[in-house]
Length: 280
Image 1 (cartoon, rainbow, N blue to C red):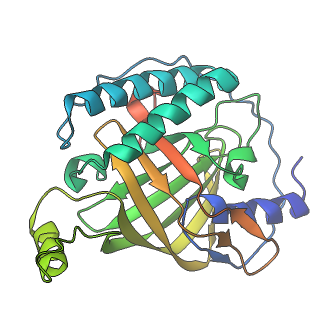
Image 2: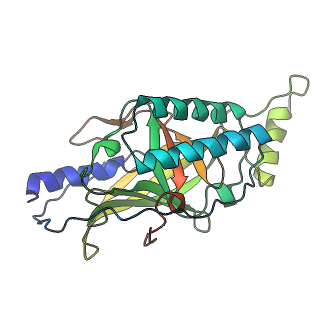
């Protein structure tokens, strides 16, 4: 049985749905009962998307190996330090490559499931019943510059969702030619005209609302406001690496939800959960 106090906590947990987004929530309470237990379904694999990101052969190979290990971790989340260390090493290699990315193929699209993080354990990683499969991730849609942050607590029987709008901020460090004092300006202009964007690259995210769904039948809408920064360190069609450049805090009821420097690695949902049905 979920008490009203627990429901209040769940409402606050909506704040933790997305790295780098500041949310301010008006709490509410309600009494609900959870009687249905979701059994983890069998996972199959979707086909890998072809690479359209500007990377070298070695970077593509690194991305492929990282993807393989992330899928392995999704199958067995408690693989241990050895696997995590391998993943961390490959993540750092991709970040160091400073590869350009195409938003239309690397950001826009389906849900990307959050599989791995580097840094202090965020609250959204801790929530959820261990007896069932819980998917957490983000979906970005370029047509209307909207995003959805999704987190399951008891499979899709009990899940949280936050929605909002995002916009470009731009490259974190524009390329500057010491022999050309106008190079930083021309570089920024070129980035806006090109389909390829450099990394690291920042987006501003503005949360506009949220909801809690129970058994896909009952929905409790929440009032949320907030803005934050999502920094893209690497992105291709199959996986992406985001950074929270600052601490994420709430103004009511709790302290930090994420720490500055948290890195989150996400995988296109169909590669790890081929039975996923997109209702977002």
